[in-house]
Image 1 (cartoon, rainbow, N blue to C red):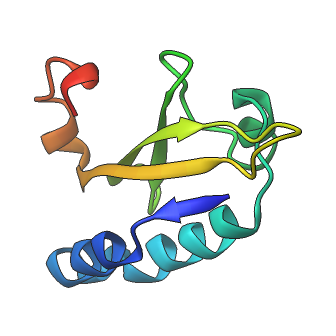
Image 2 (image 1 turned 180 degrees about the horizontal axis):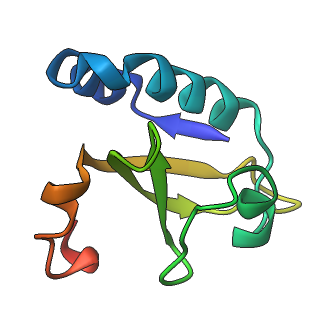
Length: 102
C-alpha cells in the first residue's frame, strides 16, 4: 500500500511519544500490505473497524489510542492507497461526531 504521509505519523509520534513504537510498526506493516478489503485488514488487525467502504479505525497501544485512515483498496490495477486522517486518544475519538468529515 502507498501510505500518505509518513510525516503525519512522525508528527503524531511527537505529540504522543508513548504510542511511537506501535505507530511506526503499523506504518511499516501497512506500507508492505496488499489490502483488497476490510477482511484483509481484519485478518491481521482483529480489532480494526470498518464503518464503511473507505474508512478504517485501528486500536493502537491496547485501545488507548485510535488511528483513522481513508483507504482505496488494492486491486489488479492499483497498489492501493492509505491516507492517514486522524490519530488521538480514545477519549478524543469518542468526541468525534462524523467520521466522514475527518
